[in-house]
Length: 584
Image: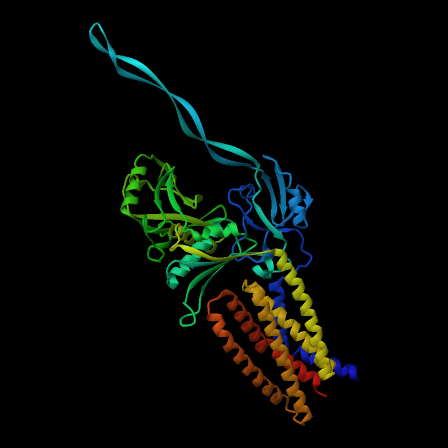
């Protein structure tokens, strides 16, 4: 009889709407986290531009891509790669022009090791011999004559030579293959955090432009998973209201961010001659509005070879001096024809911090003309027209950003640099898991001593564990980095959850002891207490969220989201479980 009653209660639990909703969120969290503890190999963090790997076609992961979607190196020269030690052992004997077969979970690549060279300047002493025609002091037949005289002298000149430094690194930055889609912040992953302060107060639009510019520059350097936040100090009278930019690069090093303090250098060249440089001196305006930028209406999109190609265009305005330089440099160029298009024989090459980032054809109509308003064009491709449009506009935005941000809007001063060791993060994770298990066991013991009912203990354990998992699924879904602040927020949310479950349990059991058998009234009273608690904590967290400091914002956001998941999903599910299991 007892077995039949237990089956009936279990069936009633799993057919409840709140339990079904709870299970659906659990499944979504599982898909978002994508746990794969058996994953082996090393994942590609970034690819150095113009390296052997870059030339072989290996790409850096796209910004915002899920960790489990990253390209993972499985073998090198048919030797299996299971960890970092295997990877570094396989590339330890690099030689110039050596061929490497590299297999990943996405393809097979053949790399040729490049020679690492360095350009040096040597001082060289040479003998300079000059023959001059001079007026001699002696006379021949009473007449002064011009004679040749040879003068020899030694001078020092600078001579440039390129020397070999041996085999170049293949240009791949790797880390252990991820085992889930959870992103670890600096505190857990290791890396570098830099706090920058603008020299002058910036508007919100300028701050957004500055963040976009810095992100573009770091992406050009082959870095990914960059976190850039704006932060502000406390306003008067408690503080000065300083403005800061916080940059975090998991797995990065101090060298990666040192260049951020410089405003940078953007140049557009024809051959070796600079036409214009970034900043207001040469580029007075870059159009980003719909009336003068977007998909080119003259060309639009076209399909060829199973792919779509869409062309974009936008206008920029040069200073008169830059326009004249362009006229002087283009008037000597030839005109070439490609299909129906006529271009000049040299391209306009864009350089950011001395690195080539794009090449543009110059229309034949600009030959020898000092035009201040010119059109910049390009294209994007995709398997569908919508994808081609999206890629085209993405390429346009990138190019606009480069033109604007060759020089950052303002100079930045480095306030503080923190370098965090990955070993410290691993040790913290181990300690956190150990302490978490001890706390979990302690909670189980206290709850069992308090209620001495297995039908109360099991739902509490299930709900508390599921609450953590759903919160981690949400973090994976929105690409939120888990750091110490986020973990503190999770602990607060789970602790509050256990407290709320005790409130629900006490209210229902107290009502039963007092002879109040209206279960809906008991649950309603319990949730009134829980809702008040949630509102109080959320109000307390909001100032931390809007304060602007990155760590405080992470703590506040995790806490608020965790409590919201609890009050909307897990607490109602627990209430149903207690109601069904406690009824006699």
